[in-house]
Image 1 (cartoon, rainbow, N blue to C red):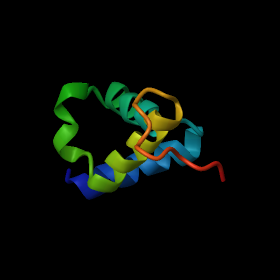
Image 2 (cartoon, rainbow, N blue to C red):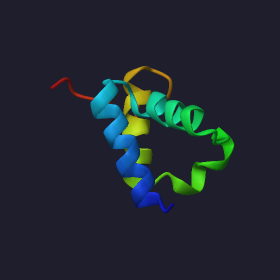
Image 3 (tube, rainbow, N blue to C red):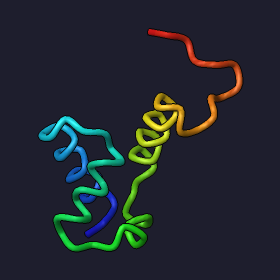
Length: 71
């Protein structure tokens, strides 16, 4: 499996279950018997950005300089 296939599967889990991207990655790993520490090479740049945005919104990461405007 390559990073594109993995990202598409994670996107499908997010849409189907209506959960966050991080939860989807962990759920997919749990369901398929994959160790979570080994999936980092499979996470694409766009998926990393989506996880980063979610983590920032949940205040798990520091806000970027300049803040974020509400939409």
